Length: 427
Image (tube, rainbow, N blue to C red; front, top):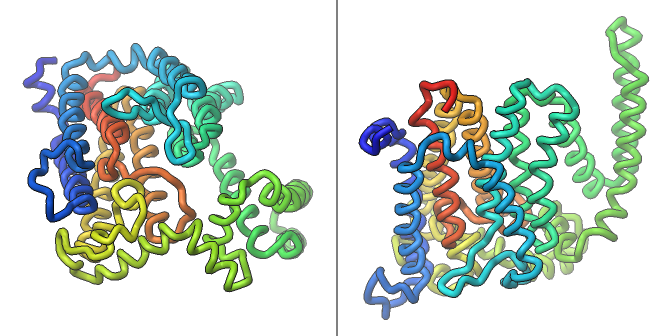
């Protein structure tokens, strides 16, 4: 396929949405670092200048992706996966520690975060495996292999420690569900999360009372001739009860104090107002200031470069994980709604592109892209507005970070390249 044909067939709506998010993101990074002494947007000693440089690097990467043969990504997906796992292992020897996490390689002119490369490689490897087995993944062996592909990078990233990035890999399980993994497993996962949170908030006694009432209710249905499998439900209730009993032990003995503080703040577990306020000032300080910045923006915002909390550096890490608070302060509700709409349209468009693929590898990889981007988007914005606990992951195409922008761009445009060949069942 010629270069002219590729750019003719590329989905320009997705490209325009990508460019819009990158431009708005860079504009807000500039706002967080702007001072009256700034003379040029091309000052590469400043964060906005560095981000502008990596925008250029990302555009070069797009040209390279579009120039390669479409079957290149499927053919070498296993090699990419192996190399990315080796790069994660190398961090334990050669990694650079920043903010308590050994997650980067110091390359002199910038820091490379290999977990971002691993997201792309894992999405490719999972799509390759699922397309190769040519099944609806009902066999336990196939399910196990698919989960192992996701577990390996997650287990290598957790000890860095970087639980936020590790969480993103588990999001790829939605690709496996799309390809036929029984929803029973999803129900189990969501049920365990619900029991965990419920136990922390109300205690095991109330969980036991709830389970007992549920069994009594179902037994009443059975007596009225409804076919309700009581014995399996009793077994599940007993297992659930034992899991609930283990929650407090895990919370108090496995979690670190900073993790316990985040859950205490999120679920309001601490009943002492003074202690809760102390937690808010310490571990919850970033979120508190972020909420205040967004709240101060009102409906129309204070105006570009006019955010007083942004200028005063009230929100730590505002150019990275908390960049969305700048949008809220300077552009108000209209600005935040615009960003959310842009992301939403992008996700809906990518779902549409994935569903129209004739090649299984392209479809599965497309859903991998959607899963990774959506989890980053959902958790980051939820964290910034205080409805989710603090997890250090960036907003795609928006937050400052060369590695993040480059590999999010690669992640997306590999799929857009695959989409240019969508009418063919195989590459």
